[in-house]
Every structure is written in C-alpha cells, then in structure tokens.
Amino acid sequence: MGLDKLPATWDAAKKEVLESTFNTLILSLGDKVLRKAQFFTFKMVEGKYLMEHLDEFNKLIVDLKNIDMKYDDEDQELVLLYSFPRSYEHMVDILQHGRKEIILDKVVGALKSKEHKRWIEMESPSGDSLFTA
Image 1: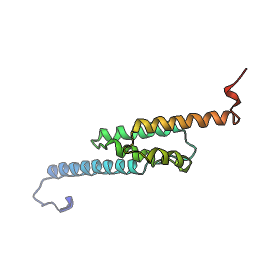
Image 2 (image 1 turned 180 degrees about the vertical axis):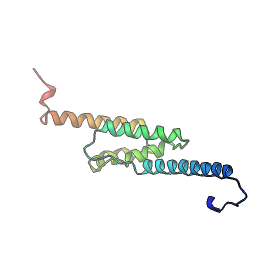
Image 3 (image 1 turned 60 degrees about the vertical axis):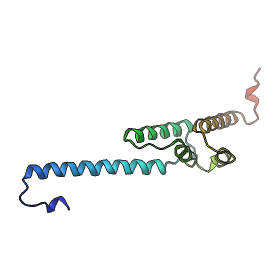
Image 4 (image 1 turned 135 degrees about the vertical axis):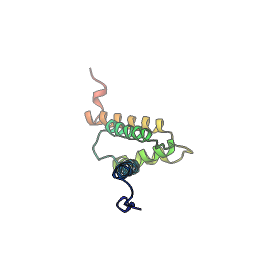
C-alpha cells in the first residue's frame, strides 16, 4: 500500500513518521544495491596505476563491510582478477588456472611484481639501468 493511500483517520504526524521511515528504508536499500553493483562491475581503466586500482578495490571492500555486506575471500579475489583490462589478461590467466584456490594476498603480490617489472622495463628497455658504473 502506498503512503498516499493511508486511511484519512491517520493524523499528519503518523503519516510523516511513516514517510520518513519508508524513505530511509528505500535509501538504505538503494545504497546496498548500488554498492553491490559497484563491487560486481568494478573495472580498471587501461593505463591506470595498479596501486591506485588496488586502493580503490580495498576502499570498496571496506565500504561493503561498513554496510554489513560481506563477501568471502574467493569472491573478492575473482572480482579483483576480472577487474583488470586486457593488458593484464596473461597474468590473470596464470593466477587463475592450475590452482585449487586463489589467495588474494598472492594475487596482489604477483600483480605488484608485474607492475614493478613493467616500470623497470619502461625506464630502460635494454635493462642497462640495472648496471650503472
């Protein structure tokens, strides 16, 4: 029953309280649905720094926990793996296949290692910067 169809005998104060409660529930539900959608559609923009992406992911996880929406580690790991652009496709395949379980810390560590290697290669494609006199 919509709030506009309440019996005429209800006084204005009761109707106001009910409207406020209804709006709070809708906003709360809307927030949870929105955050759940943000979690499952989380994507990294090509060219974004890995650490920035991981920070955003961690903030999203904390936000979900703050509204009592908890996902197990495997869900978090899979969402993180599938959030990466095509340039990470090979790394994601390696991390995902051939394992009975995916461990978030290992995934993050491997991704950071790949990012570090990429930065070294960008600084000196020949690798000469590692051996300076």
